[in-house]
Image (cartoon, rainbow, N blue to C red; front, side, top):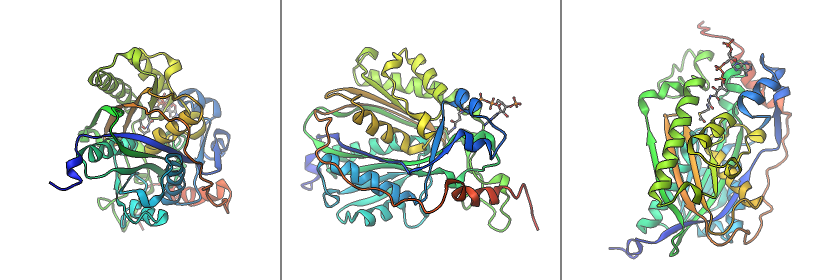
Amino acid sequence: MTERSAKAGIGASITGWGKCMPPSVLSNHDLEQLVDTTDEWITTRTGIKERRISHVEVSDLAKVASLHALAAAGRAPGDLDLIILATCTGDSIIPSTAAVLQAKLQAWNAAAFDLNAACSGFIYSLVVATNMIKAGTHRTVLVVGAEKLHYHLDFTDRSTCVLFGDGAGAVLVEATDQPIGVLASEIGMDGSAAEILWTPRDGTAGDRDFPRPTECGIRMDGPEVFRRAVTTMGDASVRVIKAAGLELEDVDLLIPHQANVRIIDATARRLGLDPGKVFINIASYGNTSAATIPVALAEAVEEGRVQPGDDIVFAAFGAGLSWGAAVLRWGDRVEPVSVSEAALPPPDRTTMEMLQPNIDFFGQGAGQRP
Ligand code: ACO
C-alpha cells in the first residue's frame, strides 16, 4: 500500500468557488432580430431573459473561474494534484481542454482530464473528485464546468438557439477529516434515448465531405427532454436525500441545473420543497450546460444563501441522456480566504459579429450537396 492509498477513508469538501461569465450579452430582444420569436415567448416558456456569448475559448473561461476558486480557498495552482474539466464544448479534441487549462494555470503538479456528461457533467465530476479523494489517491482537486455552447447553436432554429449560453464555474475540492462534502450521490445514464438531445454530425460519425447544416448543431425533442428532466431530477433528488439520512425539511438549498425555470419549478413541486429554498439564476445566463451548477453555487455563496453546515442538493439532467444528484454538506467557511483579480480581456467584436459565422453557416440551408 502506498502512502497515498493509506489515507483512504477521509472526506472531501468544497473549499473554494468561482465563476467567469463572458461580458457580451445576447438578450431576448436581440434574438427577435434573428429568429421568429418574442421576448414574451422565451420569458414565459423558459424563464430566460438573456445569455452570455464568449469571445474567448472554453479554457480561458475555465482559467478565470479556476483562479477565483483557488483564491477563495487560499490555494495556488501548484497545490493542485488533479483537474477535472466538465465540458461538451472543449477547445479541441486533442489535447483535452483540461490539458490546456493545466498549462494556462501552470498547475504542473496536476493530472488533468475532460469529462463529458453534458449538462450533468459537473455532478459527475464532483462525484469522481470526491471518490478519488476518499480513495486516497488525490487531495486537492479542481472541478470546473465550462462551456461555449453558442458555437454549436443553429441561429435559424428558434426551438434551440434561445435556450443556451456560455460561461464557467469552478470549485476546489480538498481532503478533510470532517464529516462534510458529498454525503450521498447518484449518477446515471440512458443511452438508448440519446437522439432526444444530440449534435448528430459533429463527430467521426458525421460526413466530413458533405456537411449538411440542418444535421449539425444541437438538435432536441424539447417537450420529451422536459418530461424526462422533471421526473428524473426529482426522483434522483429524493433518493440521495434519503441515502444521506436526511428528511426533505433538512435541505437548506436546492441548486438545480438551470435549463428551464418551468423544469426547476416542476422539480421542486415534485419534491415538495419550499420554493424559497431553490436557487435560480437562469434569467441572466440561460442554460450553460456543465457550468450552470458551479456558477449558481458561486453566486449562492456570494449572496449569503449558503451558511456554515448547510445541506445542499444538486440535481441535473442532460444529453446522454445523463443525470446526477448529490447532497453536499457545506463546511464552516462561507467567506473567501482571498479574492483574485483574474478577468477576461475585453471583447474585440460585438455580440452579433461573434454570431455571424454561425448565422452564415446554418443560413446555407439543408442538404446542399454540390
Ligand atoms: N419562439 C416562439 N415560438 C417557439 C419557439 C420560440 N423560441 N420555440 C418553439 N416555438 C413554438 C413551436 O414551434 C410550437 O409551435 P406550434 O405549436 O405552432 O408547433 C410552440 O412554440 C410550442 O412548442 P413546444 O416545443 O411544444 O413548446 P414547449 O412549451 O415544450 O417549450 C422548450 C419548448 C422551451 C424547448 C421546452 O420544451 C423545454 O425547455 N424543454 C427542455 C429542453 C432543454 O432545456 N434542453 C436543454 C438541454 S437538456 C437539459 O439541460 C435539461
